[in-house]
Image: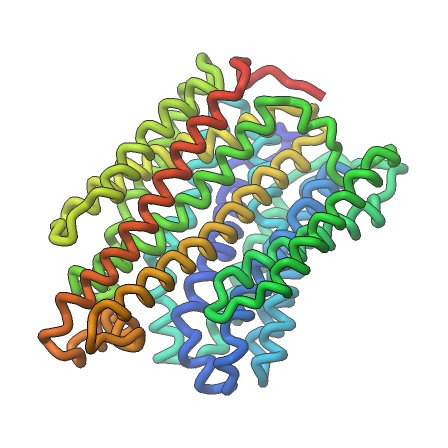
Length: 491
């Protein structure tokens, strides 16, 4: 890439805008969902508004990574942004829940390009010593979005209509498009290679079945035959993909990359810690709302220090990557997360709100070092021709980790609440739903608040124990790595 002609600062800002737009979308839709359901009358299909976005996002990610290596980052990134804008526009124009789900699928296909190609462009235009810091800055968009999105979503729904939570992406997305077109200069790539369509098909079959199986795990009425069918199709799809991959000259994912132990361990750690991150980001605010009785606006700030310290952790990673092996850096970062995970697992029910700030700051530092190090290392363990694919694999692994563990955590919570209600006469699951929402908790009988909070505490306690096991498993995976410098590239 002709980085000398590229306006690096403005391209970085454009990438941040695109990342922020994608990050806001998930939370802002959650904020507006009650209004959307009331308008479109589709409560039974509500979960699919979120699930379909995740499914198509995950499926598109590795394909975009390969196309970025073949055709160049700029064109593929612009295509993804265009698809995202089109999907947003049509989502805003939806008149039924079925239409909204369809266009959310399109939106997810577009979003699949944003994170992996953003990181790939950063790898192209920044040297190693600056790359981690910029990735930390770009990653902070997710933390900022988690704070801004609920407030923005509430304002839009109250003052305009739910349709504008999608329409707002149009000017933001177009701004990012214009900035990338004008300020990112890239040498035109000429290739006689074609995208491996059959390999893409088998990979899509495997990922779609696996992701749908993960979604089924979170259903209150789990269909075991359907779940086992999904897993069987996923296994067959991946077997067909692997067999086909070895026969073609230009596979969508070169399996030779997985012979590199550092590449494999770093991506596994990223997936595991991303799974832990879901327990942290979703259930720590649940604790502050349901057990401490704080309003949602204040409860959300419990994890805010993690977003701030994530940036600090990325800066630390940038320094460490120059002189230390990925294995040693990850050992340091996992120690931070382990301290936070142990604290979450042993916290008493009466823990003061201020302690959550401390835990969030410690975990955020670990997240910043871990995610930045695994991303940069994955890029540097492959040849320049495969940087896009390597980045997309890292992103896909994180998405799979998050999707699986949010379902597992949901199962743990549902089982614990059902058992708790069974052993506490007078309590019901509907009461648990009211307890978690501070606005409705006041409607509960005063004498049942304490047992209901004990039930919720039990569920959170077991979730955090399982989350702690993910960190321990990450240590074990990291221990399997061979010490190599992150600047060492392998084809």
